[in-house]
Image (cartoon, rainbow, N blue to C red; front, side):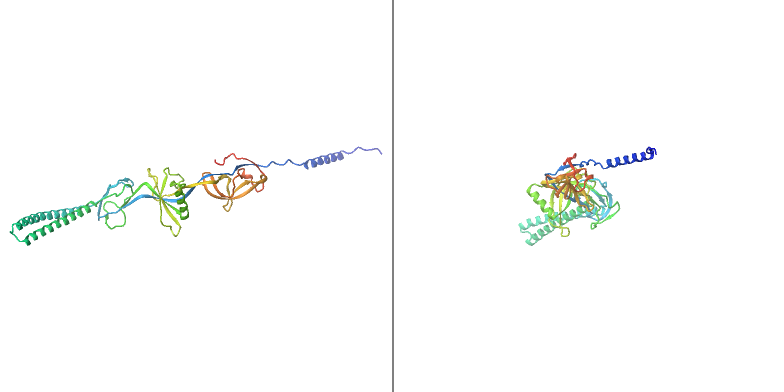
Length: 378
């Protein structure tokens, strides 16, 4: 029987098997290992850092005068513009003075009568003294004349005092500012009846330049601050940060501290004075007072971008340890210094802190540390 050639089907099957075997061998070839990811690091070091205290404070006027009437009467007119600046002694209100003017006139007339009687008594006493010398009248008559003279002098003094009192009451119908400053809104209008014993002020005058800052501080911090000031390493100068985050251009200066610790809060009130030439500070405003209490000579300061927070609020950072493996550290942070954090615990000088490439960070990941583009002081 003659030999036959392999069929086309058999040849196609053999070719397919050879192709699959070749693909299988190629898939078993090892892939090249990926290079460790790069992370930007800074070397932790110590430096001098200012020890600043940030304390809450409230502004108050350096002088406050509540304007109240010292005599009773009807307000005739208001003599100032509300919200304006007034000088000491400037008239603010005018009360109806007719009754006080009549009283003054009566006191003046009484004084004139007393002075006339004094003149008569003085003349009689002088004449009787001469007659006594001539032995024309008795000694008793001369003494009576001298006594009448002294009584007339006393009546003149009483009348003069009554006139002065009437003039004082008349002057009080014109109510003036006792201090210079900014005057508030008037609480009364023309035609209102005011009394000398009323508790409600007519208006208020406040001196706004300089202003006072009342700062509440814990007693322990106050003792530490006092030691810094006594040692000369602290400063009495403060900077005020306003509610909108801006800083008042004029520095405040610490003046006095309270002498009593509040038993409920354990705090002491400090008082500072701050220039306010443009009246941008107003009484009652809440501020943050920054006080330089000294310098920390061995502080560890790190960029804020290197620090993250856990869901529980703990501060953490990544450090490149032995074998270039990443380690997660829990940090104890102090206050912020611009775009940096003051670290109280968790880092040591010489360690490499990761500040860039944190999106790839995980524990024990081998990395390639390179100098960060952002310097630590940036």
